[in-house]
Length: 356
Image 1: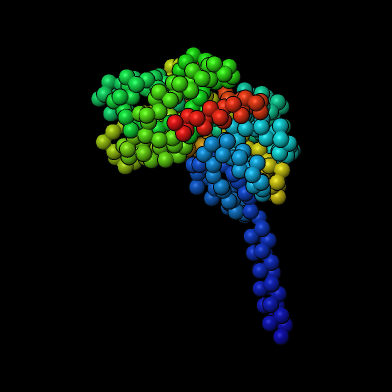
Image 2: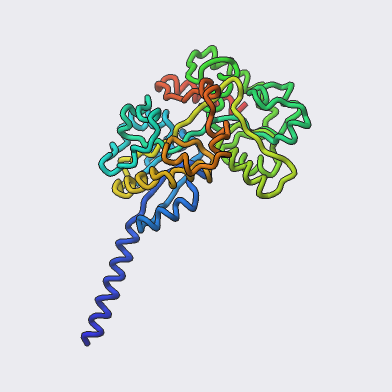
């Protein structure tokens, strides 16, 4: 009888342990292809919990979903201008830095960002540049330049590329590329200059295959498209995929000479999350040098973590599309949030671009 009771107790304890473990779930809302499976598995082993991810492909998509009432995300990974928006909406929890001793690993130049002075809410995770990815073999055959936004905006080039070009389905990113090509700031808000950028985009649009935030990675890697406007980490992935598949062409990517957008994506705690304890545990884990290096070594993003650099291969650390050199950095700008009136104007202009 005692043996039976002991067995029942053991089974109940096991069930309770399983239930407790099942509740240890961290919910992360993150960019597509921005966290490797290897990294996730190592964290789950260490924390004895599960990490569940939902994905977005644009900051506006993420903000719209939250605005529509999505709740329960412990962590988000917004870009600086989206952090600014979330803070304005009072949507974020402050960091408990006592739980994040590895914050010391963040490079000094990231300690006091304009969108989060004092790094009170956001922990820098990765950097990307919005640039041009291209089929280097095909473009060399066509004699086309790869160092200018002219490649996606000028009909004299696009006539050789019709149906082989994709651009991001992002109003801020595409307008920023047009503004840079025209010699303006990505923060330009003069309606006359916006109209100039709109005309530039509409002139080029008939030559483009589509607007794409994620499918361009595969399409570039298999040769369906020859030029893509997108993120440096995505271009790295397309390049690696083409190499692994032994495609008869090479993928390249570079920052246009007119300049481009630099993004710093950070971990932030959303107020609707139920597990800030696991969120801090995950951030602390990701701040360790070897773990932080994964976003560069496996994903192809730049890295704000000094302790990660010894773990990153010289080939990746020396890639100017991933870690921009000083000359490129001077030509990069970060997007900042617009006031509500300007955002409405941009949204109307974007709708006109998409429907025409």
